Image (cartoon, rainbow, N blue to C red; front, side, top):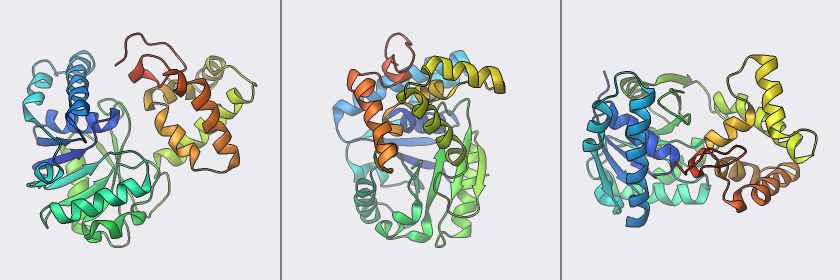
Length: 286
């Protein structure tokens, strides 16, 4: 049983909203933080949409999903958001300096007992641990998009992470319906993205180079392997902004792929499922 009963989620983007909602859906009080009231207003719309999604896709969610909204509190004041948190899950953009600055602030605002966890998909926790002021109570807790279906939670500490903290976060992941995946040593990309990112990059190279249309690349992948989704369908689920940020920090070839994503999709508002269109058309923005 988890000892974590009060959680704060920083960031209300696609995945931050899902983490907060899944935690509230599991019966835990959640404080949700973002930078201003306009962003919080958009987050409330995401949570309303998640109620509908859970009721359609999660067995037993009727009524329970709507009740989860009552366990969410919204903040634009970081100190107030973390004042009584057992665990803070950070899900802000994949920019190291932004994360470091945020943890430096958190270290001065949160109670000494509070555990900090980054949901970063590519950055190693060791790159942020010193900024927290509490490296023994800091680690990575990485979720996959569409958390209610793809319910893995990778738990990865640093050499400084307390074993008790690691175990507490593994227990928390189980308590909110995740399948915990302990990562025993720091690894860029963790387990999931170490497998997934090379696939997505290879697919982008094929499309950007004019070798194959994205839809045909998905078709061959699904037909030949039996996979339910192709790489470009996965891109759309993730949202194109995160892959773009990752590619932008890569080598020259990766940066070319980032430029291709930006010019052909992101600059045209085609961000994936959440915007209603990416490599595929989904209808109204989610």
